[in-house]
Image 1 (tube, rainbow, N blue to C red):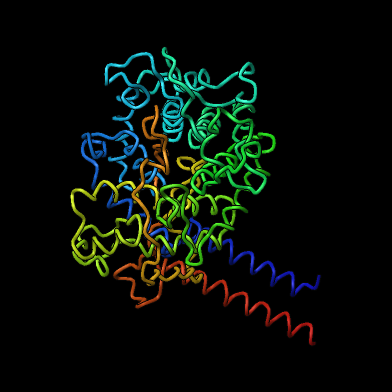
Image 2 (cartoon, helix red, strand yellow; image 1 turned 180 degrees about the vertical axis):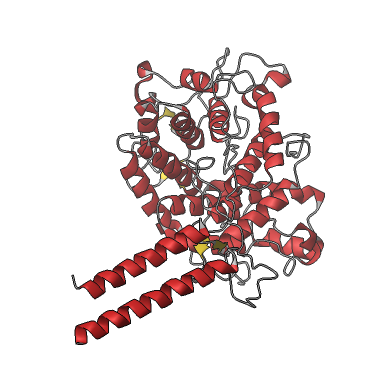
Amino acid sequence: MPLSRRLTTGLGMATVTALAAITGAPPAVVAAPAPAHVTAAREAASWLAGEFTDGSLPGPFAPEDWGLTIDGLVALSATGVDAPTRQAATAQVARHVRSYNSYDDWGIEGFTDGGATAKLLYAAAAADADPTDFGGYDLRAETLSLIATADAGHQRGRITSRTTADSGPDASNTFDQSFAVLGLARSGDLPQDTVDFLIRQQCAAGGFRLYPDAADGPSPSCDDQPGATLDVDSTAMAVQALLAAAEDGATGADDAARKGADWLVTQQHTDGSFGGSGPTTGANSNSTGLAAQALAAAGRDDEAARAAKALAALQLTAGNGGAASADAGAIAYNTDGFTTAAAAGITDTDRDQWRRATAQALLGLAQVPLGRIGLDPPPTSHPTPTGTASPTAPATPTASPTLTTSPPPTGTAGPTPSVTSPPATPAPTTAAPTTAAPPITTPAASGLGGLPTTGAAIGSYLLIALLLIGGGVTLLVLGRRRAG
């Protein structure tokens, strides 16, 4: 290498070394704007947090609805909003385990609901609590004890309820099984049997049925049930559970999750929305929220973004909320609900539906998979090195709501059985919010005008200037010698 190049290289390295020594820290960063759907999710979560009282959300017939409270905790945890409310709610749920997964409060002893127990297990694990001692209960051991064993034949691996009386067919469904897979994966080893049973609820088309049972009893698989109804909500839950199972190393989970996501894409409406099945067939924010979350988890970003746009069109803001503008952030179940609220406000009668819709819908805006809530930092903003252009946040959707009318949700996370289960839905977590890097500051008396600095003294710049000038003189002398 010519001497002049070696000196030039050395000079560059010396300058870089000097700069590093002067600043003593990596380049300062500034926070890029959060994507519009993340901002919308946080606004929805902030509204929902305001609906909590002493760590719980009320139901239509009771001052505390533990299934809905857990849904609210999932929503707050997915966005990192309101840590005190999350902590209070987690503590309240831990104190009321048996109020949720049994009928003890009604004087009916000897019953343990399998789906509710599995959801509580997921809640404890996602909240970074001890699932072996959550409110004094070992939820992992309890869930494992409710998994059907080999002598159950084709029902092996199914989450079931325990009862001292003959109550007929088990009421557990694909939501319950998904929570069992999620909870067991998050709390320790995941039995392959539980994954296999969930996969058997998937038909060849890729969608999952809601109920494992046919009219004449349990059927071995979805394809063995003639005319099985495939359900968007159940498929979205199963996809997320199977992605968590695949991450845990379960056999067949990744392929089944991919097929499920492929089927969800075929069910998306032209405006980006989704509907469920049965009474929730019409496009609604509950089904759309779960589907958007699952699609994002499966890497279907374009479809997830379209679903998020449909959800944002149902969100009240100060500008579009009309008589309900004080409830900005809340998300309507469907277009009719949005229009009615904008005209007359959210009535006490309707508020329960808004809480349930918002808790589930905002998951499709936050787009953190159920299997990752509490493990990954909630999406807030992304630091960008100084001098680098910040990514532009997508524009907030302005289209009018286009979702069609459908009945209010009957459960807290999509359709729920009317038989033996308290409502079963997503679960609480806690995760530290992402901390933005400190802003760049300019010393007030630096005499540098608008020149940005990192807080280093002015002498630093003089030293750099001397290094550069000295290097230039050296190169000039060497160049003249070579020419001579």
